Length: 599
Ligand code: G6P
Image (cartoon, rainbow, N blue to C red; front, side):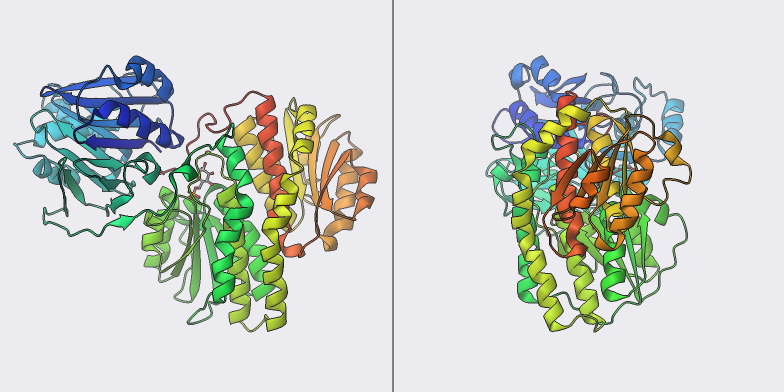
């Protein structure tokens, strides 16, 4: 949600800001803006639309001279995307500029308070309220001003602030929304996320909640909320710049699908080599909490963990879990799954579970993220930076992590013999190669996409693990191609939804589970009888399904528990090519953002 970048140094700030924002555009892309300090004045340029519109206005940055600046790319929360609602926002005198990621919950009250003092507002945003409140509190020192701001503001925020009265300073503060500080040589940076500054420095400070950073070009001082200096450790980023670039592919999404074999290999190998996870005390219940695709991994997790370990598992959407008085005991293992490690509802759910005594295991991709830091233990997925808004490789690695967790719990429960452990781990280790084989079939999917991209409604049906992966296939399709789709347990369809099946409706039927195969065939026949066009996915050899399907895609045989990892690749490619046929903006679908740091 919204990307922030800031620069202070000797170079021209604007090109660096534009470049950083380009790397953060996945966080929000409905408007963008920068503020640059020039000759003791704050120059603000901002506009509705993609970053390209801003860059054109600034002639690639040439039209904004100055070597201190802040930039922002927005995902609208308060007020529609418009020039005036875009960030940065300033005080009335235009001496102070602020960029903000997050959501201020008491902004209406503060706005009324400021209006009574004579402040006037031009936008609908909560951020403009911060700018005027900052003006109200300012008495000569920016950090003192921020300390007062943080006492008053409720909700979440990462802020970048500059002032023409302090041309040698850039201020950053965060609470609940991510913000890092990058350490350069004679120059320093702030950013919502590491890729924004990775080409300039690998050394960063991860700001904790409530911390305030004062940056000059030669130094950084970090304070706590009471203005005590906080010693910070340098965090060295060990990924490659190229990992956050498109590398010749047309879309990040495609590149990231292609990276799945390697990402899975990296995630599983160290754990298989070092032995599975150990548990001091075997949990008597598991609660999995996440949002979006990560939640769909949790649904797979329920089947896998219950089957392998015999431990009851509940799966919850984080935004529901946190407000429903969940039952968590000190022997509940709470598994929090998140690519970004910053999703607001997921983080809040983690805290709620912790308060109730649960042991938290985070399955997280971004090292040093809030969820990683607040979990008792972390199982990192090593997918590398994922840029496309629609997750693919991170989902793939999260699945691998959940399989490893299932096996580990089974072993801890004494339900996994050494021989079985080897069989399962071998099957997992084969996965990258099997996925690579499926990826070679991409042109077949591209062909089917040409056939099906005009569909208005698509139904994904499956049973058991196939139902779990149907949820993800359906989400992928709708989020990037804007085709309405629904995922249904194949046996449940007849309880109402089958009324929507008519001549030509596309049904994607997943039938990879031997035990449920015959049941699936019956369900496929039910929709066929009502005119559906059926694209089935089955395991190699189960050719019987061809009789009742229009098209069959096959996945190679492997352990049946792990079929979601294979099936999903086909569904990701199908969604990708269908969105391509429709001319959609694949990496940046409308209305979405990758990292959802508001409730
Ligand atoms: C957003 C993304 C989804 C993602 C979800 C959870 O909605 O668009 O792709 O699954 O957030 O994100 P997380 O970073 O917590 O996995």
